[in-house]
Image 1 (cartoon, rainbow, N blue to C red):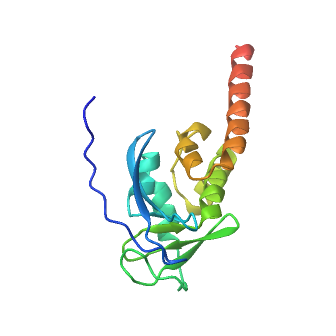
Image 2 (cartoon, one colour):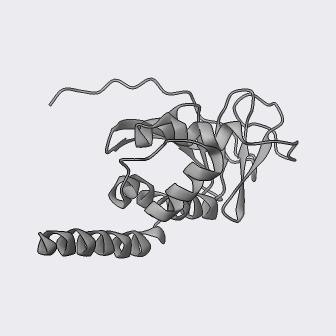
Length: 174
């Protein structure tokens, strides 16, 4: 098996508690992606482009970053400039308009995964922002996030079961 070479920026200082993050590289469904994980608070930083790599669809990342606005109390852990808040389904992400990275507090990553894991949710976001992202995304595409949001696993499995039941029902109708 060939070795994968992956250049990754170094660790950052957690904007919440000052701990040094652990840079990690993981293989998702569509390839490798990098994430910085805070060992103390469980927050995570995705540098520009990493969320897009996770889903092979940069429109999701664009939707998160481009619709952030207003000043936030947090400074970017990568470039030191002020971040902007990005409300998403009842929680607020911290987005850097300068370097385009995204900070997820521990529970926000799970909430984001849940918010995007159903077709209805993706349809709503497509309509709200006039985007065409995720037309071929399914609940199974969110499996890489289970590593970072273990509580999301049960909801994901339930959604997969519903999807399989619908598919089986459609086959029975043929």
